[in-house]
Amino acid sequence: MIAYIKTQGAKIVKEGRHLVVRKNDGIYNTLFTYKLDQLLLFGNIEISHSAICRLMRENIDTVFLTINGRYLGRLAVAESKNVFLHKRQYHLIDDAEFGLRFAKSVVAGKLSNMATLLQRIKRSRKEPHPGRKAAEIQDLFPKLMMADNIESARGYEGRASALFFEGFPLGFVEDMGFAKRIRRPPTDPVNAVLSLLYTFLMNRVYSAVRIAGLDPYPGFLHSIDYGRYSLVLDLMEEFRSIIAETLTLSLFNLKILQKTDFETETPSEQPLESAHSISTPDVTADPIGRISMTEDDTAQFDIPEQRIEESPAETRSTGKYPVKLKPDAFKRVIEAFEKKLTTEFYYPSAERKMTYGDAIIYQAGHFRKVIEGEAEQYQPVLLR
Image (cartoon, rainbow, N blue to C red; front, side):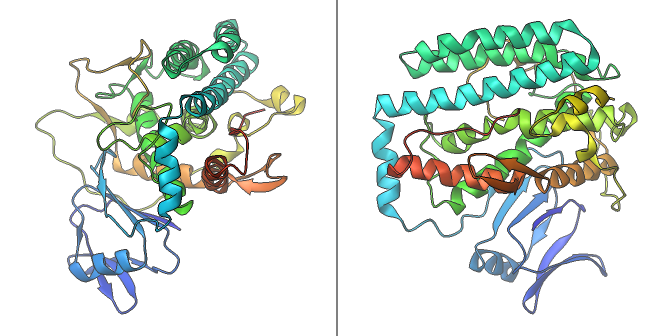
């Protein structure tokens, strides 16, 4: 179970074998630690010493974020004891052939998923422009396969991302003010949701990496740097379109989110109190988020981070004030994300049905097999 705590001024304390979320004299929630896999805390949330000890004893990944979802840090729980696996990871950092082969697989998966999503937008919205951008992304595949160094692979990823975000805006039924990917700060509703979902996704991938017993720092596509979870960022690339970008389209086109759910944050504003949970429409009913689409799906379908390198698809700063979700809408995004992660699909590589959340864990385990030599090449999850 993944728990999100966003009630400002709340305090998490230990009571018996469980944790409770209190504010003033009221109990907002009870957390059963034997069911808890990850705890995400947004903004002004306190944790008592005994509650921290319980979280660490139960090895529960506890993540601290700002009230708007920017990642701050996490509790450092016990590290994996498999020193030989970690030694292998660090040894392979200097293996240029292995690094290039893995980077190509990751980028190829991401390019394929971006192109597939753009083709869906083209068919459903009857807009030729996304199809042209998808074709340009597909044209990069032969060049990617011929790349003889990781820097080139990164360059093709950056170019493909720029092309993707040129076609992505046409996937929205209504104009939400989105023209390109802007993250520092997000200055429109779509960018605000993308940034939030990427953060959620990164934390799920981090958790999967730890479950697999891997060290999250030594990656390949993302260069290693002080404090950077390079492996986590590598493994989340294939899931950006599968989870975050399809979900963003669904949230707006199904009118789960509207312009009135956002506000511009000015320096004088204070964080708002969290609201009570509300019922959210089933975002997984939108075919855009499925792992595969049949002809019947297409006929009825109407679309109602840290990055690798900076590219034309992103802008570091615009001089504008950030746009953020209101508390009610924030909760709807959390509900939709968790609904998405518990949706099942058939994964051919595993020869069974699994949820998107399970697929993230499976892929981390798959990468471990590649590291240990049990699998020859990394195979990303692909939209069909």
